[in-house]
Length: 392
Image (cartoon, rainbow, N blue to C red; front, side):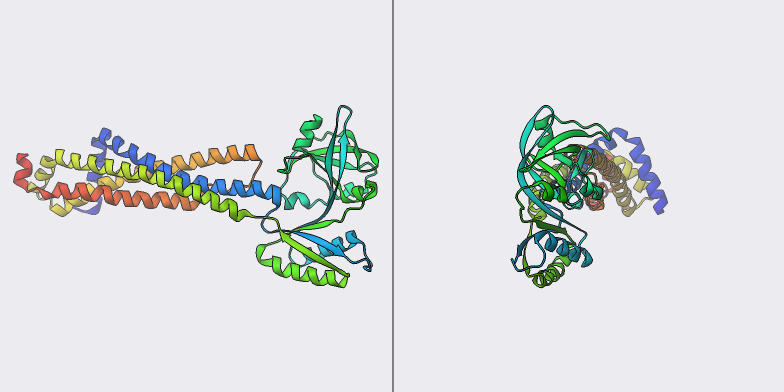
């Protein structure tokens, strides 16, 4: 019998025994969907956890550059920081921002709260992956405003009872040693549990009585960090200063934890898959025994053992293939739903799609199951002689 004939015969048997096929498929679907979904969710979960960590400590690779400026330097610490920021960008940094902070308070018509006031530049939101909850973030033109533009983080906005509608602003007062009227222009999720207000760096320098030493945050490709810091160190030495860099990002810790959880869950899913595989093999063996007369009659009319063996293997392969496709489709749908939920809950909009590695794993598991589920029943189907098969 030709290959096409074998496939047609196998399809006919699968269609004829719909109940048996459904039972075979269900257990395999659950196993393949479970193990595929775990791998996919592990990848998406890792990305979500890293994104949440980056909101607190910066993207990979973020370096917090402290400054030590000599009293003999011609530039003040802010001038040195600005020079080093330009140096970082010229040498391959993706973003850089000078920042400093002081203790202060922010008040509206209904409440006042002590808070940390951070003066910074627009790139901080990129480096720290801030999510705009409402309104906007600091922009370049804010450094020229007489009334400082103030951006609240979520805890401070909640304490003050501030809710901004689209494109709305709210008058406020900011106290940093001196009290100044400002305008609340946005609310951000910065991953911080405590109250923080952000203003343009020139506004903080103008109104704060103290002059805190600034720091410089840079975000650069990990393979460029070393060369960027070397160049910054040289520039700092020319400015009678030195730098004290420190990496703040640590995605490896989250990655290790996620992979550990993923491995444990994958082990559980693998046990489910093995159980399903054993079930489909048992069902195939029982079915092969029930069809002993059919196989004997086929052989009596000229079918060879090889033909019967191939037909049974193809039936199992078709059944498991359908189960594999269904399992992968369920896993893809589940991953999309969980990604949407994660995006809504933690505000990460660039989570990866359903990973190809998970689909490939599901396909590989399907192939292995197809082989395992087909060989044993096929061997049983061809083990009896024609006479014994007809008699049984």
